[in-house]
Image 1 (spheres, rainbow, N blue to C red):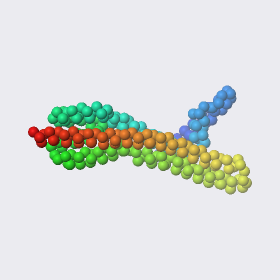
Image 2: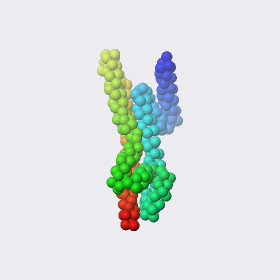
Image 3: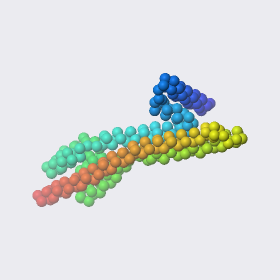
Length: 248
């Protein structure tokens, strides 16, 4: 019963939205104005079969939600790596290991996290420190890439749903031809229209999400490069400090 109510509600909403969109376009044409892009898109969205177009829109919303979450996370993970490593190197050279650990704890981001893991094993062998930094770097990289698989899923689903709408639109067109018993352009037009509109919107959604996804991958690659550079700098500082202690 609840499913029926939800279905009827969505259907009524789609009809109302379509009527509003069509009314806006007719009003604009009556006033001698060209319908706006938003009005045209809204009208074409409803014309493309509200059921399938809602699924395409859902893929866009879910994909954008993950994109925005990743962008915020990556933005908060970025720091001034050069200044951070310069201060950290100075503390290690001065023997202030606890101060270096405190600096890492008070700094957000994966660079500070891998440096803290290395400093925790300051008294161990260099090989153990390097292995720990490498292992924790892999963990941090996984955290940076978290949720990206859902973005790629939405990118793949959007055009697939559009193509599914295309196939169903073609089936509708042939059904209309069979019912009419005559090959008429107006009979075929409705099904073909649904087929083409769903494909267009599916591809548009995929392109939008792909742009965001490539931007996110670029940010991740930058952070990974900073982590690798910071790991090398930290290992040089730790090695130099151990040599100083060994010579005393």
